[in-house]
Length: 636
Image (tube, rainbow, N blue to C red; front, side):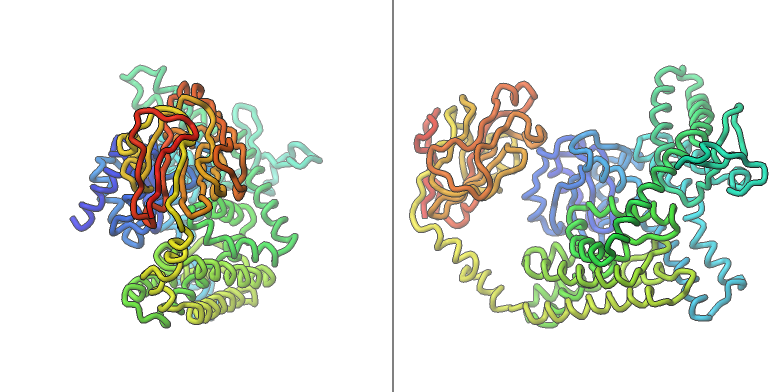
């Protein structure tokens, strides 16, 4: 019952249960796939107690909760009447291809992340105890611990068969059956390389391969699929498509057993003959490409990935690199990506610790203590969203430190041999055949350096007085107010019918969360500058523009509702970000009729985004208006 009220508001403000396609969660955030993200009241959710922040990234609507996200996830599922199947069984068909890829990868790997980390930790401790001489490789203790940790990785295709089937909306037991076939001991032995009965295929080419088996006379390329990643994902993908087709053509009375029968009978041989070899070659190419980039300059790779890792985490884009890391382990036996980013969480945690030791602000202390504890165990979202990112500079400092320590790890050649725990539980993943070598010790040195540098920088740069000045309006807020030196007359950017902003079909604007303003149903296709000023922001899609007047008023002009989904179609910006504009100057052309035919509302909100710095915003009350005529006044 603890999170029932929060769950109820989350479901309501993301547009209701009917607007939710699927829901998953990672360590700190709920990841929604919404039918229409424009229906979500993002500003309300951001300001809600119990929610750290909200963002849209990777084709997902992400609500950052914190460490208690599993409990909130369960409450939201219950509130939205979501079954286990509906909570995560949907692949996004909307947005950019990259966003759809991130959504797919995170949907497949997130459900298994906890047990994957747990198995890796057990395997890591077994390696550590052997390296320091507590147990021997021949001892029963080591063998059982290693088996506990290694079993999941060995039978990885079965686990991924389950999660991939869930993501593709297929029968999960079919997915598991496909994975089990790939690691079936008899076939693993028969397809082992070096078989005395093997013959060669594609001799003298990149695809040269052994074959010791045939299926209906067709050679089966000898490959090992234990611990593999990509083959089972592609296998389940094709199985899901075949399953849907079979459900349409097979009579209901025999559908229960004939659909799985034909799906497994067709896809398993196809996987061994075609899907498995091709996807394995692709996986090897990805692994070789990542290693080639790393070998080009380990120092630069560490500097770049280390510095930007926390940025990737903010937007949930790190899943793309995690997938490559898991593939690297399955194809090469080790990964070089995760070690380069390992110290980033310690840099972030060190900054928070420094601020904690310096501040006397009770609120900051109350935020910093749990954020520090989470950070030590590798979960940095509480630190990022609650402390460093809102203050900007501490976050930048942490990225710089992470880049430096990432370069240290790169030069040392530290490798990760299996996926394990986060934070301090991740050290054992760097223990290879050579035991506790210099590459392993560098992971300790780098993280210790990151923590120490972060602590020092956080302690020396934080000032309670500066924060208090900002809160009282004598800092940045006061500077902003001083920029607004006169009342600002705003002319209409388009001609058309004036509409009350609170009545439009966009909760972000109609709730006045973005600020006071007015809406216009346009009757022309050109937006002009409403005053003399500068282009502060211009969306890449061209559907919205932010302007700042010479005397400080900030205006957002948003052409249409949800038109970001058009991805730039029908919009032609005539200015660039940072460009100075004069009143009446054309700044964006758009095709009003095409937008309407595409099914989008063409109403244009014109909003004063820094309303909080003004005494009032006085709106024009006419029914219609011409472009260039007085629309509203910002009163100081």
